[in-house]
Length: 118
Length: 179
Image (cartoon, each protein chain N blue to C red):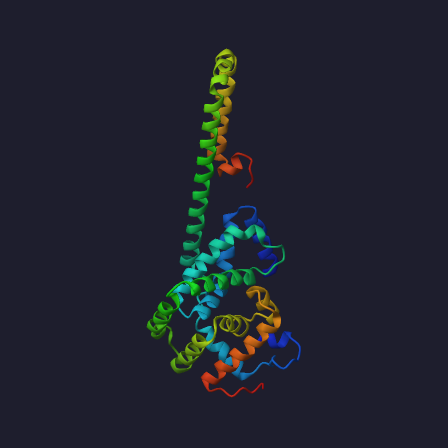
């Protein structure tokens, strides 16, 4: 059925449902892919997951580079302070680092683990 | 749950980052999108490649889809733009025409003469007219939906559909009993 004709007004270019339209529709129907096509859907989702993986790698690389650079810049001032407080803070920092790693591994994607979104 | 509200829920979940929801959207909309692109391209393999690219673009832009918008029309719009981009690539149309000729025998079945005539007539239509015909005559889009999907004025869509329909019927040797 030519639905555009039924929905629209009675203007000249709109047509009532005709046998000709049915025939066109029947011929067009031969081009229809299957309603369910797991192979196609899987191929699409594989690409989506790859893209997502590339985004994750790019994000983690960026964070690592920026973090490394920042640490390198502040290290001369940070080092004496760290040495001074390391005795007291070392266990707490170790626990925080472990918790962060666990969140990264168990909590799903890095953005979610870092609290930067979904 | 109605198809539209299910789509809306899936879109909301996909916008929240759910690949499972997006996977269901792919399952639900792969058929109309691929059918549209097959009719618009004429080349089934190229159409399926474009459909994959369309879904990739849709995943990247899912956040921009407004609540309540038609997912099917949105996907067809992205697919149509990708098709136009591919058409503009140098040499693509000639190669497509050749592949179209090569593939034609595979797609023929119950009524080979009619199907052949229709495919030839579709291939001869200008790209924008072909897209309007593929949406309105084959995929049950209203003129307004097609205009939204293809980003064309409503009057242009109506005129494309009318002219395209006349040319297809002429190619099939069918008397237009509506005119």
